[in-house]
Image (tube, rainbow, N blue to C red; front, side, top):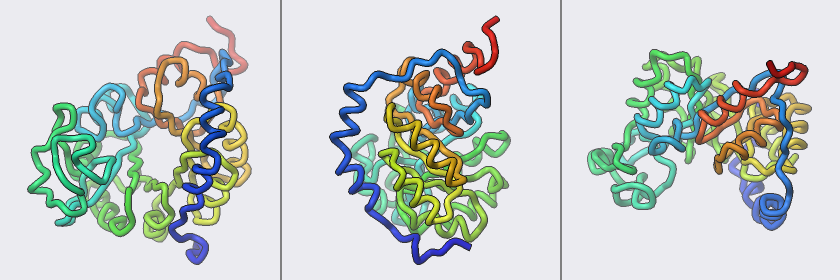
Length: 278
């Protein structure tokens, strides 16, 4: 059983990210990308970020369907809770920032939100998302934006008979605690790939750790995570064919991307290490 006295909501990753922000930006702007022409001997799991959000509006039924059509191993979805307790998919805390809806989600009922759209596609509940995924074998990575509704998510996953395919993710440790009590896999996410992020994941009993992609820093992060016995993932948000290729050559265990089509295109067209191109 994890020691929860060591696993409390922490701003350490945020502060570390602020403190190293200039360095991270320097890496992005000045460091050459990895340009290896081979892919890992073992293919990473390809996870569609918010569905396939580089091809369809994020966290929508259209994005989930597109990810499934592309053959992803998993989908990552952002889950928030409305004022009346409805679990819905949306990234930001405020509807106005990225949809036709208005107000803070936590202060707004689903009845008031229902019908709002993002780039023409309707916002959906978690129940609708699980309905779309129930008859597939796709893994489901649910990112919780706040603590307090982990139990409700797990109960809904049981209702749709997908609990065995669910992992709970968060940038904070608190939402992961109840999932771990229920023996559901958890993953800690961070913005900057540091050894401290892997340490925090270990301290909290998470089985996976994910970081945003920073070219020069990611290889060491992946190594540190694996040395700690963690599944090591890369979160790729700025997706071009070249950047997806570069991220994949770092050999993550899990690759979360807006453009799974680019990932599969590279993996399917490039020989694995030790193989010859035909």
